[in-house]
Amino acid sequence: MQAEHEQLGGYSEEIHQEFLEAGFYRILQPRRFGGLELGIDDFVRVGVEISRGDPGVGWSFVLGAGHAFHVGSFYGEQGQQELFRDGTFIAPGRTIPSGRATVADGGYRLTGTWDYCSGSMWSTHVLVVAPTFTADGEALGLRMFALPRSDYTVLDDWGGDKTIGMRASSSNSVKIEDAFVPDHLSIVYDFREHVLGAEGTVGYQLHKNPMYLGRTMTYFNAELVATQIGAAWAAVDEFEKLMEARQASFPPRLPRLEAPEYHRWFGRLLALADSAETLLLAGVRQYAELGRRWEATGEEFTPEQDARLRAVVQQAARLANDAVELAFSTAGSSSAKRGSAMEKYYRDVAMYKTHIAAQWDVTYGAVSRFHFGQPLTF
Image (cartoon, rainbow, N blue to C red; front, side, top):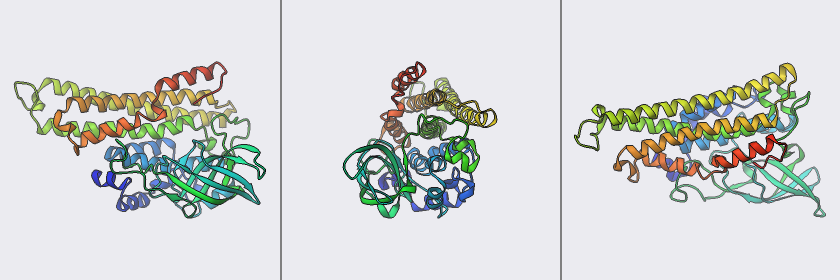
């Protein structure tokens, strides 16, 4: 179904229904509002396995289902009741500001277009960030707005040959035209450096679960890295099939299962994929432990700790990317042909590498500056 997903720009209704029946969309949704309220590590592990089947589908899933974390952390009780009331909440989120919001009676009027809204195909809502102004044009800063599917249009600008990879991620643009957003569905956008203090976030106060303290940098990167580890395992799976079915490329033309170099390559692939997944889960679990420590002792879970763990989980992506690169470069030229599974995984990873979250040096510089008391630029 991978070719079908790439043409669709997302995943099929059959897959969507299976995700619904399995409760995958409700993993991070608060139990109080019909969710499962499982851990972030559970969500990440599901994302890895879906991505093992198709990295683009995994990307669409985690970035559609994953924003239940943000709603559960930062929206008030009225907003959460409304957003979660139908039992399933799937919402792409775009935090690069675009459009314009103007204060109106009881809320805001919002207009604009936001690109790269991953997970849009099966979305029930969208979360977007926009600059906000008074009726007189005075700037009021950035806010996040939550809108139901009836209030936005998903543009036909994803899938097919429109991008080199992640074609199944449903990363379409979303257009909003003069929609009214009530006050309870809009919040100030200050997610990265909020101070927990003694009370925590509104979401923690509501659910008494430190997962909803809302530290976002490790969490956001863990979502993306899950897709890369899934891609690494998919490449391992494909390489193993080729090991069992093909002869070696070098003379003497032994079966690959009898050729020492293929065993060395496959062993390294396993080491890279195992290490990447272990590192990701360790980072996510350490993140969860910092939240529990705050709850138990009051010791602040700081933005710097979040930033540094973000850098840790990015190292997992580097290992996973190395695995895909190794698998692709040693699998043989037939794996570079259009339509081969290995070619797809290589393209999907190449697309991830263009994302700002994969610019390792930017992360390193940002973490260092933050450590020395300078603004966290990313």
